[in-house]
Length: 240
Image (tube, rainbow, N blue to C red; front, side, top):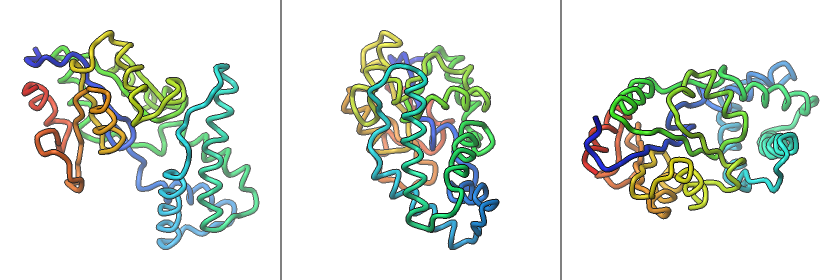
């Protein structure tokens, strides 16, 4: 059983629990090939770079609607603007609207995604030690189907996504929204993610304990709260 004062462990999703197979550029171009777009190494690099810029420049995925259908429409339009901005930079093509529908639906299923190998074992261990588990992600409502298809949904007691919470990381509001699901104080919770700004700084500002997951050892985080694998997490939690 757990020996720390932590009750709940929250996780980021993309980049922490699972990732895009290959790269976004590879997936975007694979679906674009039927529309005459060539998938070359240079083109993949260009699409990846354009995606990083478009995603960073996009507003937070927060929508002032409550009806499910209107919410889904807002989510789709948010992503349409991002994907359109990508190909506006690298080269637009005929049939883009049909292409977007295909690639948007594809990213709502399991095919483009891959679970990190350390995830299932780490989640099993944390649950066996008595921790409640949750997810806090800047994702849209497709997330529930993705998580189910990847075989991860069964591990989690709560799932908080930005389009339903009405706020996005690094805002303190989304972390409080997640805490309310478990009726715990911030000091009883840890949030684990791969982004210093959204996950570590965001959760720390909300008074949770932020843990950086840096699988490649490329981010200059606090070494006392940084792990290279989720297998290292139970030991770190026991020190809190």
